[in-house]
Image (cartoon, rainbow, N blue to C red; front, side):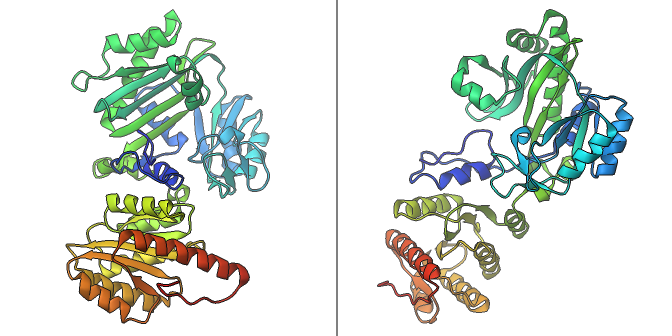
Length: 443
């Protein structure tokens, strides 16, 4: 069944939708800005939080100069890509590892040339990888103890929580699976914030040494201040370390921010890196469409997030796989339909399109006219199944049937989904043997 996990972006949740036939729960759509690690480190530093000394470099020459400035022969270089598992990843040029130890400025230059300008492929990026446009170089610090710390919004408690563990420096999801008792959750009273007592409790219970408890508690309060003032949805520190000389440092940081707060967090949102996002999803956002690319072959154009998820469900139940989640919202205008079709048909895997629109604010006959114009204008060869329900649906049905185009108007949702799947399979067979195909409702 479909379910969006708490504190995860909708993109990852929706991509999991295509794997299951029925939704378990409806969830609110959220989009959260993620920023690069070097920007996260700078932001933490601005709040007085301890992080290892380091700088970003956007070219091999810059990397060499940064290494010289740090005046240390024991450094770490990290590819700045918005994905987990960078250390175990590999680049499209064959170079292995997005996190490497370096010992000289010359080595910094050489390794940066292998990373910058290439795509890093990890378990989270998919086969295409994501571009590495810069590297972060920091002094290597040796941890005496490693912990996990996160502050995030918890929907069940309807407020922020601290999530902490004595087992840091590793995949926290693996810890949750193998040793869930090692992860502790501390609700935060929004009227009080992280009090001295709560901060010390967290630092003590996860295992900071006695001489570091006061420092760790103070650091936690600073991190919460950042979380609150910057409209963050998640601050994840892994590992949060106590070094051999008893410093408390955030060795790695992942920060996410609520997109609804972009109007008052202008600086933070100016750091958005669209090269790390799917190009079609970026374009969709510019069009005002809610679009997430999936792995299937049946394009979906729907108005309303709930109806869109139901449409994906019924496609799966009929043996098909949705190619996208696309909600055009309440304004299914001809221009919105054209923009949506451009996004859907840019995916070469799409072999059929299912349009499922409820005509309320916009009448069904107006939607039908827009749909016909778009198909004619684009000279579209992909079969389109249209289910238009609502105001003037009879007129819409007549317009589509008399258009002479590969648009098939079907009122019943089950029949419409079934025909979409059948058309998709027929198109794929025709493509495989390189022949043309004619369509009819009788297939």
